[in-house]
Image (cartoon, rainbow, N blue to C red; front, side, top):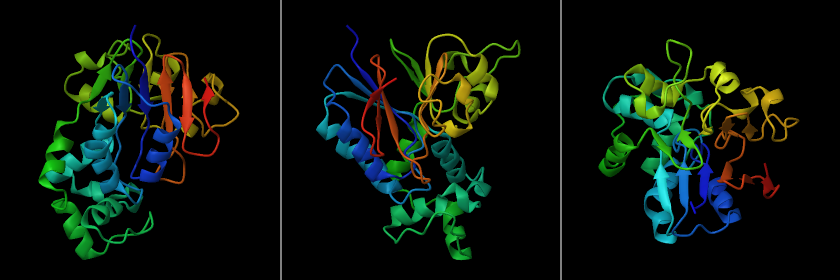
Length: 260
């Protein structure tokens, strides 16, 4: 019998929400898997704490397999480190200043605070990441698959013929799409093995296609073949986790667990 898979959505530096969700889940055992969909950094006040918890603390407290996927924010920071995308750190809404302050042990500014010129100079160099974290960011995988689903940060690329590309077959710009795509056709038209994603806020997805609390657009989105878990942690929302195959939902907001 395959074990359980617990999938956790975009965390964005919200360590208290992460701890709360994990505390509300049943304790995974050695046959289970914890899959994190990426976007551990930016916006929330505890990016460094989230990374340390996932890399160093959680493995000491569970026998379950831990899978940490790459999100578009991790992908963007790798580009910044390589000097290929300094503009990523410019918009205050991206939350890059909060990440730098977190790793430097400085007081973390409110999201939306513009960086000073001196702070911007440090942000574009991205030298505040410890070398071990910088290596870890570069090595994060793009997707994971098991008996229950395909797990990827953003979605499946769309092929020239209008079909959808499996992550194992994605090349070139298609691999970028795994982390960045927000094409509504994926959520509306994809039919196949279940895909669980983060990245696109569930409030932006078509509520009429969701079988899970369609009256609450901020909740988990459960479409015909796609499940969306980005419920806004780190940006005034909450964190959501899903247990497969049972379909049980766990949230950091005070509503408890429920079945999808």
